[in-house]
View 1 (cartoon, one colour):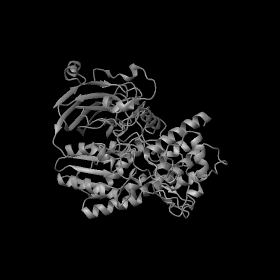
View 2 (cartoon, helix red, strand yellow):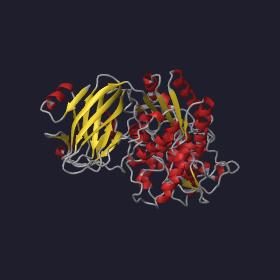
View 3 (tube, one colour):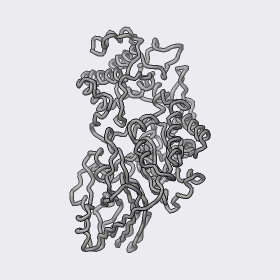
View 4 (cartoon, one colour):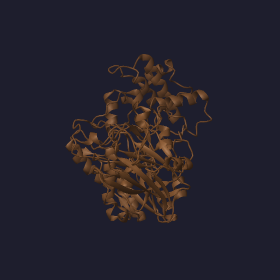
Length: 576
């Protein structure tokens, strides 16, 4: 057991001897904020004095309630730890103190604390390997960063006690909806991205959370990027593994429900069972409900939820129907006009939204294997009655990028020429590529649907709106439908590339289709009625055409990426 008593004369010597100490929020280098200071970075210029904790006779405090007091405790080995904090409330009552651990995991929401009282709380946290940046190997920091937010100037942290404990672990396999995200300082809970995996620990007891959810993950790349192996290596008999994937699988036709998506999940589940763990399948959180051209609300992830439920029945493992539960809740919240307080875009939550989703999961866990691990004392962060922007429409979602200039970490492009790698780096900067995955798969064919998705930031602006049903093979309730309507409105789809009024979004993209969309985007609307043949002539003139051009040839991912980079450069020259 380690005890750090901040109101004693021996504190400074003890901290120095054990390499414990204060941490300061990072400058805008979010890629390092998890590894170095518990998930916080500076969003504004704040003086060193404001950021530095103050040691008084009663303990440790900090100047502002919107600035985290961050203290790091070293530990000798991986595993689960119980952390206990003692606070002394000063002359003024405190509305609330949030206590975080590890990578800004919200562990405690105290609620109001009366003046002159003492407050003691404990939580469980997990220490183990984690991939902090794309391309890195899993690394264990052997520290527990503890952050307190909401301290008043005369309310102090008196002590931290850390003790290794033998409790089970709940491992989270997930995408950006559950992932850890850094927080801005000064703290504004609506400004930050946050995943429900960051706040889940607050709603549980007698079990520690090990969150390996990452932005951009699918059932395929979670394994190939190395995250799954870290969980397998850590997994002990009696542990629980939550699976929440589907948002990104849906954007890749080769990961369709009941096909590769289900196949990949089945393999994960069987590997957990082989190690005597308990897999729990969770259907994806609903996006903010969309409305079709007839005014009917819908969410396009329902089919993936049905596939997860069917798999859970096949394998006789627990299933949590988060999708349907959240869809009904979001319909009500949308009607109340408060979703702008909870969501950053159509899919991603802020601090308040992530906390609300975690509270929904707690409710859904009541009749499952997790029923004995629920924390009845957990308090919700969000005031759901706070007025939001009822007129705001949530269209689309963007990758959550933790670097201002994403690093080129793809492991399968080292053999490409340096000038090609440079253009791939430009594709990251332009927002064409997902910077969250480890493999580019440059020579795989790309479907037309996936191309339309990641080309929107280059060939646009593409303004999504309710789909009007132009194509026979697209339902108005598909994830891509509103975006396709945006392409139609922007005059980027040539009639001659259609087959019997079908767009064929699941088919491999052809060279002629690629160049026709690219070239049309370089002309103003009203001047985009350009044939495939004429587009190839323009493409040749502008350096977009490569050798051995064949309009019906399949396009590789690399060819699509390089074309979009070059189109972007032409648009910059045009002043677009």
